Image (cartoon, rainbow, N blue to C red; front, top):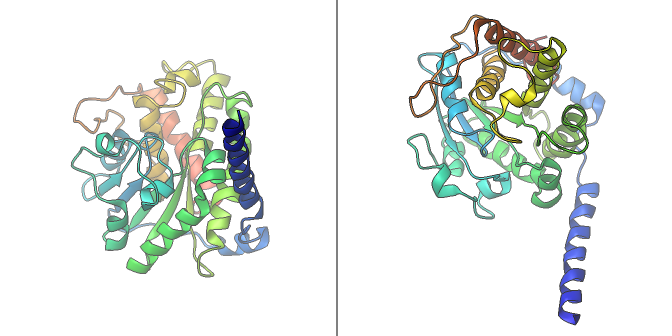
Length: 308
């Protein structure tokens, strides 16, 4: 009993310390500074991009492959993935869970080496889910800033993006309600702004607002009572949090719109998975809606770098 009590007290102390760090972490630029910092949109790319993806199963292998098909000839990409892997693990401070299984493919490259190589035009990073636990226990701003600084050192003009994800469909706070609230309270105030506070003045990390995009798409589909075979949010998912082919295609569309500053409307919607097999394709009506929503979200969400 005494040993159990000691362990419990130790765990409580660690949790308290982590919570204190989160509350006392540098807040980063204030609202006025953020407005000034991001006031000028990024210039649209003039050539195909080389992109490195760092993340987990909400990145997966299929989404970057779909993005490459949308972007067309010349786009190239590599990745380092894990199972629910926080940025801290990709940096190498703790092991990447599921490393061997998730990186057994030709597009794998070591994350630290890739970022330090200067070979990529854009680095896209995402934090693990549950996002608030990642912030509390895995020092998310520190590792986002570390990757950003390493990338900028290797290639000063590189573009750094934070990929906003989502949470489980059955979240007790409500799936849409959490997406609405989490962008500001976690992705921006909990991760991005404190990361900017660790970087040299003027450094920017832009946002790929996939969570916002999924919420916008779901609201539109559900308000219409379904569109082209997509009845509600569950039809985008393979389980409570992972997307199916339709969901992955939508994520790729948002990435395309943000990275290339181009409307995806009219792009092909019969795509292949990473293994070369045909992905389930949306019908033309749904494909167009997905493309339109992705472009609207890219232009209307602050911090994407895309001109409104």
